[in-house]
Image: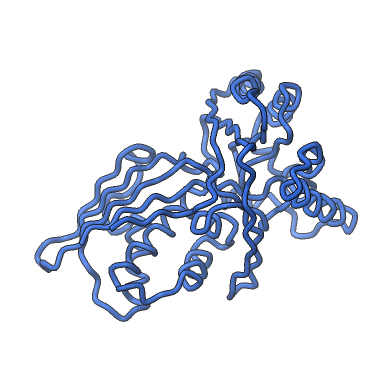
Length: 303
């Protein structure tokens, strides 16, 4: 049996929606699995693109580890596979690369197990592995997802991202682990800061649903994570300023960073991308930009 999957990158938080918002992007990792019934043939691994020189090509690979969790949960023996991974999502850049890998592995293994697990069960397993659902859910379902995780169950609502909104992703040439970005956050925040974010979360949903894009700049402001994570991303203020001055509707850190995402609706994406690159260059940091549409369909499975 041969299975092919395309899993989208995701951007989480959107500034004010810390650990709540996530949206899928038209930037994909691809997984190709060929199962074998020959027990003498060991599993093999091939990686193309991002991480081809650094990611493990053995049983430590997180895609394979996720697959084995499904085999165990379904109480089936491990199925050896030829595995080919084509990675286009930058690693450790706040674009959901680990969520895409784990979700892809879980989905692929579930197909090999004749679909014994529901999508909700897959989402819960992936969330437990990731620690939060805001990348996992949109990678599976697409669109803009509002997520809730109580430590056991995941609840979410999906909204269609407007076709006339694009994302400009400015990706600096350094990695930032989610664990490090989490550790810098305070354990408590003020009531005032909580209200600040609540008002902007509500404004963000209104801006997307009603296409009131003039609200996005305000709606993507944040006091729960960005003021603290800016210490880990040199030049952040200049990148934000450059994007806004170039005409971005709103700008924020993508996920835990260090990628910065700007939302645009006009043909200014290249101009905005170059302005963001210039912002990083002022601090002697190399970066590049990608212009992406949003993905409203989610993971694609072919057999």
